[in-house]
Image (tube, rainbow, N blue to C red; front, side, top):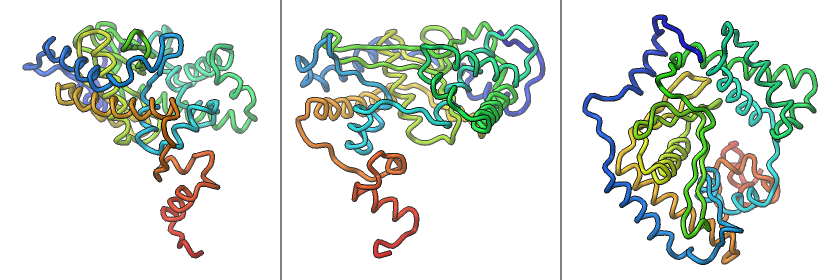
Length: 313
C-alpha cells in the first residue's frame, strides 16, 4: 500500500479538502433508501414478467447514457462486439497501473508500474484487451506506453497518497436486481474510499470531464445504495489529464434524479430490446464514432454543421 507521510502539494491538498467529511455530515436515513427503492420499482412495474432470470434485461451506465442519446446508436452498440482502440485501452491500462500502485511495495517509479500494468493486461487471457495490445506496432506500443505513463504519473503527483485506513477498493463491482432477477443493474467503480455508509465513489478519467460523467456516478450511487442499503457519502470524477476533481455530495434529491433518469432509460432500452418500436435517430457527439455515420442523414447533417460546412457544399 502506498503510504507517504510527507507534506501534500497544493493539488493533493485540494482533493483532501474536497473529499473530507464535513463536521455536520449525517448519513441518509433508512426511510430515504426505502422510498428510492419503491420509486424505482413502481416506475419499472411495466417490465415485470417481460424478462426472465435466465435472459434478463441488463443495464449499466453505458446503456443508460447511449439510449438517452441516439437510440439507433444504442441498438448498434448492443448488437455489435466491442472493438478496442488506443484511447480505450489507454484507460484500461492506466486503471490497472493505479490498482498496482495501491499495493506496490517497492520504490514508486511510474515507468516500472506502467510496464507491470501493460504486462498484466497483455498476458492475461481473461482480459479482452490483450489481443489488441499484442497486435500493436512498435510505434503504437510506444505511444500507448507514453500516454499511460503520463496518466499514472499525474495520479501519483496530483492525487493524495491513499492510506490503508481509507479502506480503498479498486474496480469495485456492485449489482442490484428487480422482479426476480429479470432486470439487473450493474456497475464497476474505479476507486472507492471509506467504509459502509461513508463511501466515496471515484471515477478516474483519462480524458476531459463532461456532464455525462456526473450522470454515470449518480447511477453508481443508486446501485450501491440499493445493494448495500446505505447511500455513499460523495461522488467524484477525477481527470488524470487536468488533475481536476468534480465532486458531488449524495443527497436524497440526487438519488431521486438518478431514479428518474435510470427508470426512463431502462423503459426505453426494454422497448428497443423487445422490438416494440423503431429506434429514434438523434444527432449528437456520438455521431463522430457511430458505425453508420457515413450513411445516416441525421448524422451526416450534424457532422457537417459542427465542422462548419454548408449543406450545399
